[in-house]
Amino acid sequence: MPLTALPRLVPPMPGGRGWFGPLAVAAFGGFLRFYRLDVPHALVFDEVYYAKDAYSLIRFGVERQFADGADQVFVRGGTDVFKACGTVEECAAYVAHPPLGKWLIGAGEWLFGVTPFGWRCVAALAGTLSVLVLARTARRMTRSTLLGCLAGLLLAIDGLHLVLSRSALLDIFLMFWVLAGFACLVADRDAARTRLTEWYRTSALLGPPPRLGLRPWRLAAGVCLGAASATKWTGLLFVVAFGIMTLVWDCGARRAVGLPRPCRRAARLDWPLGLAWLGAVPVVVYVASFAGWFASAGGWGRNWDRATSNGWAYFVFDSLRSLVDYQSQVFGFHQGLSTHHDYQSDPWTWPLLLRPIAFFYRSPGGTCGAASCSQEILGTGTPVIWYGGLLALVAMVAWYLGTRDWRAGAVLLAYGAGWLPWFYFALADDRTMYLFYALPAVPFMVLAIVLACGLVLGPPGAPAARRSTGAAVVGAFTLLALVNFWWLSPVLTAVPIPYDAWLSRMLLRAWI
Image (cartoon, rainbow, N blue to C red; front, side, top):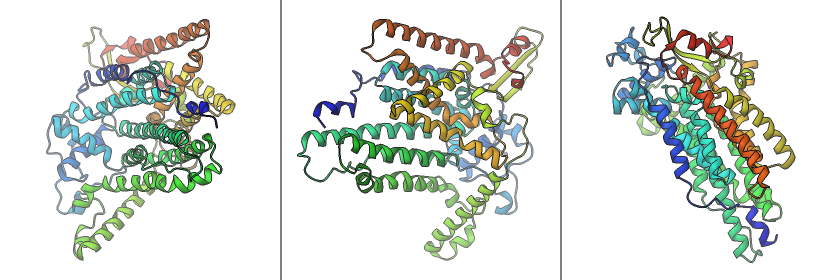
């Protein structure tokens, strides 16, 4: 390969560090997420489980059962909410999700008390940071600070992302860790290719092909994906998908510099450590998230007395065996979860926003200046972004089939990992599911939009007329998304508005 062909392997980044724009967009997203975060002063939707479980974790290290009327006491700031039990077995609570997301919610309660702001603030922080991470990742993928900032802005004004960022549910943390893991792998891709480029430029090309070092970005990705799995089991889908993706990237990088038998050499030189970072590390992180359960006698299925009665070796073995048994019970629970819910929806309806979730609704009298008022938190995406995202994903399919561009492939794989498996769960298990389960796929839908916008704009050397027309199209789309978000924002953030104004924002009958 001639040296002049090598810059394609690692295209140059745009000038400067590129932090100001992404930080400004993240600050805007943070304002949207933290402003009036304590409204409503209530437990909304599944906060009735996670906010209280989080407090139990920081108080006892494990989830415990709650007394009757605990919700009302908790909302008033009371902490005497636990069931009085005679034995550990009577107090231990069976919970269906790993503890990391609840530990994060509990951190906010530890810092700011048992208040709505306390149990929502870390979710708002995760949502804000995800805007920054996506902006920087999009900048790296497109080599454009402008497109990176556009990605952050679109995520900041997506309705579903905003609602989950302002609620103490687990999905915002799952989304954050998945996105962070993806961002680390994109950075690792650049670092590995830079190393191969330097080897090609400086070596005699006669010796053995190089190893690519310890790959700290890939290790970081393993930690992030382990954290995703320790928040919700669906994080495992991304462990598998991203693991395959990055190993294929290794093969492609060695092929790009002209090395013979690139996949065989990648398998020998890169994949053993890659499997450790993306296979073993997530398992370690997952098990570590149960530290409170291991250290406490009060966890579900803990068998503390039996484990501690025969020495430390038996303690470790029996504790791990008890954890595996606990996880098998959770697996059985998820397989049988088919109870009807008014706001459930099938995954093939999610991209069209056909059935959002009412996280909160009340009629607060005349507080809005009208005779009849409505106050709601509606878990729905911003339609302009979601419908535009659907078109952009179709464009990514065509682009990938036509050019095999790695960016289109990565976005399609990540979006598919967050959406397509739910088809199986719906058809095979008849599982109860909701629109907000699609949240981990939302950043990749936004990336598809931004990549499509890059195609519309054209390359930097395109004719001025092409660039100006493309800029007008992209600008018009961005403006429409902003107006659409502004119009929906009262029903996303529990702002009291007249009933007629609320009804006009219910775009489909199923939204009511």
